[in-house]
Image (cartoon, rainbow, N blue to C red):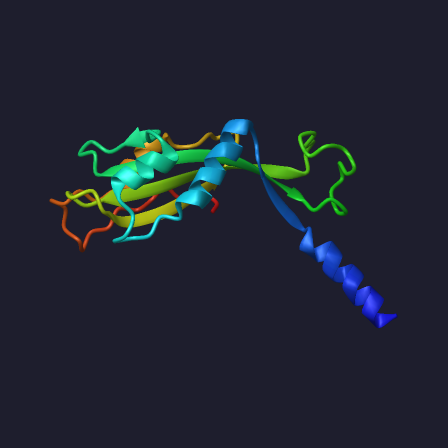
Length: 155
């Protein structure tokens, strides 16, 4: 009996949070990010362009790129208040998240730094993709001791 309860509890907990892309664009973008698997000092700018396509935002010096997508986090199917409705009928059971894949390249086009920035969308809005990119990107002329601070949002 304990074993059955343990299995049932594990099943419930496994579905506690589920993040699903919001649209076909977001599904495609998240899939491309997974395919890309960017690795510092290995991934080239051309390789990123082949997998991801043109960036959503590019820094002024063109050394940093950003790609965005959105997901909707819901409770697992057994714990969700909208189950068994299709997942697109979200109701008030979760939160919308905005994600940015931030990539920085050296002058030769090799990835030197990456970061995934996420924020919960709210009525207060989100900073512009370009603003987040520019704050994260440290141009080569900047001092390495001073690191820019990203806007404070819920990760």
